[in-house]
Length: 206
Image 1 (spheres, one colour):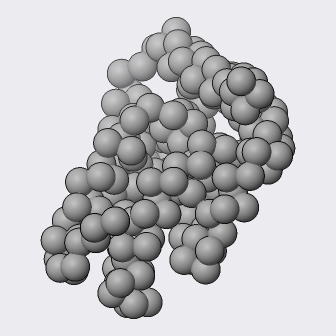
Image 2 (image 1 turned 135 degrees about the horizontal axis):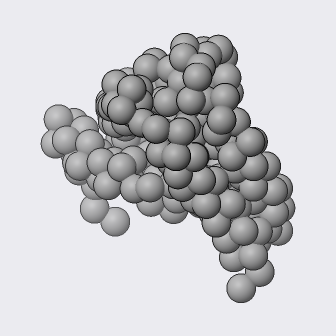
């Protein structure tokens, strides 16, 4: 397997690979939209919660965890548990849609926890890191621990920039939202989360 042996080129390729993965609609995007309606800093806090799961995982992959994650039984357990948690989050967001129209700057802790849970409950986050991510981690390991840290930081900065942009855009535009728009946006987030939750539960068995 060929690896990129030039560090700046590797970091640039990491950023390019990360962009489509980060901006794709998914559970983290859904909670960023929902929390962004209440707190303009939600995206940054969600990115921190995401990183709290991602950074240790990268380190564990560096130490050889990928084979365990790819185990079929582990995959099924993560899928079922993660799917149920995702469905629960979806119902909680739907339940909070009315109060969100009147609340601003809600607890920063809730956004951090939302990012952590939406990431940790997503089995495909782990699967993607155990496959595509593992290859990138192996490449980063060529440059030693310093290279691994730079790789992790570059990837996470893409998350931080995108999540911050989404939540800030949602927060700044919310003054134009009617109660009906709030309900529609939160229903959209609910559908995304529940759909992913159902898919997470059933997909490991097919």
